[in-house]
Image (cartoon, rainbow, N blue to C red):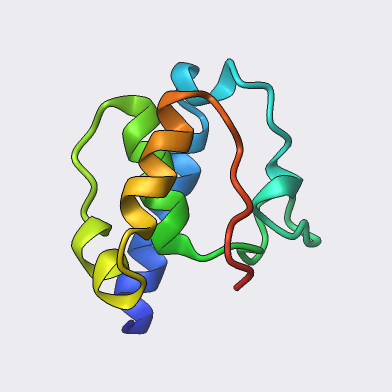
Length: 95
């Protein structure tokens, strides 16, 4: 993944994390990001493709990463989406 694409994806994930449908789950940013000096949204702890698909499902948005994730790990996208629909937090792949 290019640095520009990764930066854009991380910005999208931070924005989506602040949306009410994700916020209502009550998750701490520390579940997904390592805090740093600038605040709770430091480097990602988890695979950004997985987190994008998970948040997209929660927000009922189309995922831009589902096909790429399934190409890397067949069936992973469907598994994460099913977890999101059940409001279950899966074990994400560490980054």
